[in-house]
Image 1 (cartoon, one colour):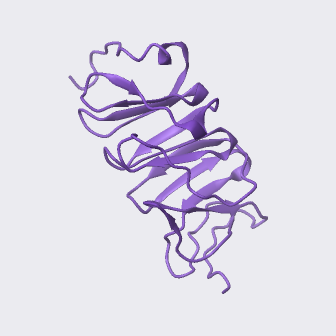
Image 2 (cartoon, rainbow, N blue to C red):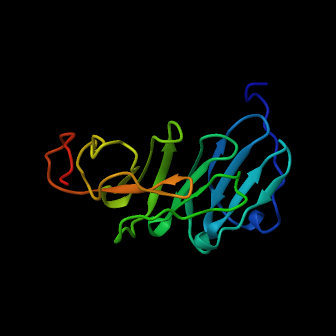
Length: 178
C-alpha cells in the first residue's frame, strides 16, 4: 500500500533487546538490519528475521548496511569495522584495510559490486581498490589514497583509505607512484 499502513515485525528474542540502527531492502523478500552489540538480522522469505552472528562484529555498534543484491552485502560500524558477505549473510568476511583505522564508520553505500564507499568520523572515507591502473578516486573535500594496484580478498575488493590532508576542500585525482 505504498507505506500507508505499518506493522510490527517479529525479530529473534536476542535482537528485541538491542537498538537497531540501519536497514537495507533488496526486494520484497530480502532485507538486512544491523544494530548495537554486533546485531545482524536477515530476512530471506519476506516474513521471518534471522540473526546472523559475525565474530568480528561482537560487541560493536553496526551503524550502516547496504545490499548490492540478496547475496552481496556490506556493513560498517565502530572501530573502523567493515564486513562483507557474498552468500546472503551465511558468513561475513573482514577485508584487509590499511592499518590505523579505528574511527567509527557511520555509512556504507555501494552503487554496484565494484563502486562503493564507507564514511565515518574524523573525515574517514574508504573506497574499494578497483578504480583501475593506479588511479585514485576523486575525494570530496579532502583525501589521499594509500596503496596501489588491484588486490582482492576472496570476492571482496580491498578498500583503500582516503586519509585526511589539507587540500582546501578541492577534489583531487592523480596517479599513484610506482
